[in-house]
Length: 278
Length: 332
Image (cartoon, rainbow over all chains, first blue to last red; front, side, top):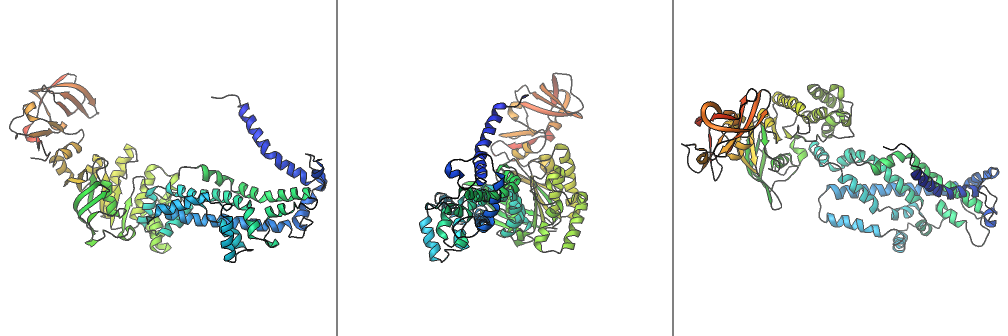
């Protein structure tokens, strides 16, 4: 059909790649400049490898001039939070999607649409009432308060509902005739068959959890629970000189775990979102 | 070795009456084939027996015990599905052992039973494979294996061969029948293929629009169809139906239709003239389509190759005519 490569398409793709890479490159270059370079407007696009130790320093020495935990601790907090949110969301949505798809109970439709409606209520909209609830339950400044309000997820429930609905009826019926109880069916059929979808969703939810800013800001005041995203922002204090090179270094470090998760689950990610036949 | 009895079984989906009062008794070890066009309720009947649907009315008794509302898992009935419904993420061995595992049998017991069933079906070399690595015929065998390994009280077959190619269907047909006869498991077999129905059944149920048209042995259904629907449905090509007044057939009652099977029409020296308009050679025999002088169409089947004439002289032997009531379609 086509003999010569499509130069226009490749050109557009390359442009897109450059568009996404450039900010990250600036970040990387900025991290290795001296502290005042960005403030002076003298940022070079060539990284200065003599200052590569900045990453090390940020990771262990706490980076900032302020008191606070070193970045490795913030990364750990972020990681635990993101994993907890992703796992919690998946756990809850699998169960709710399982109920909605495979059981006939009164108000099933209502239950589903109620879940659907919460799409319109992300944490930013319900942040004050959510905080009131969390603080009444005494969960401010601990991990449960940090993660629980972010766990209920209509998106994941909808996705799993689609996946489960696509399972052939005969599979359900064959398992029923073989004597599988509902939870055995969930464990032996539904979960193994939709493994790829789990991985795909985990990637999305992990990144979602990792990027949380507003809720951790509100729900935690103890520095022991400072996530890396919060940590970056806290360094931009208006009353002192902003150490841009350190901020860039921490930002670079903060990018690594999500990238690692995406790379690790990339295959399953694509399969889980694109594959139709089971 | 179980008996099944259906008493006045009814199923409505909303306003649609899918099954209307089915009464039926299966003897132990009997293979009963349900045949009918799609949408006649034959699959629904099977699903009611399996417990995948709940009847609107009536009773299902297995070995005399009322199982009408019992959970499918407790019925001890195995089903073979049209698209096999194998568990895609499990190996052949795991597919076959799943029910046994849920029943809590020991691993050594499971391994023994699976090996035994696999040997019966020629699956011994495929036990470690996944369904996606199997051919259609092999998948069909695994589905069979999954059913027999449980040693259930009953087998249900829901058009199990309709996804196979024609040649394989003939082999598998014989194989299923042989297996069923050896295991002597009471079976209900649903199909829309009359050849399958005729060859496999101890007894045949012809269903039409949610009702039983006829229950009898295959030969009886063929030789004495209970009504016009059965007459047209069983036998290929279908029985010719004529209006006796137009065709000039005397000595049949008034307000009737007569039927004659294509293979029963005799070619004679002097008889009715059939103008041939289409000849279909099948190899060993030939189908000849034509028109009688009265305008009615007729198909006849003859051994041998196609004739090189445009007209045939034919006779419709009186003793081979089937007479049906013109209004009700019932046999007279």
